[in-house]
Image (cartoon, rainbow, N blue to C red; front, top):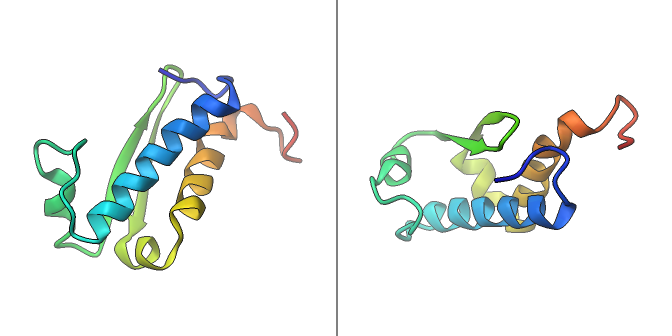
Length: 95
């Protein structure tokens, strides 16, 4: 489990996995981390809401499928990573 103060590599790995799953779901592929099929069901809607579970917080993020479609996997991972690190940075982006 990660926290906002976890090493950057650990946070990035978690964000990369989530981004890969979102891109896979957007393409209509089966997502291994979605055994209950909730992501597949969300695919019928305009957006998907997912949680990023960390030791010190749970993030609830909503993204439209259109945004997921036009954004590179790396861009989605970067967005998630920034949200994960929010508690760690001050108003000027300094750790």
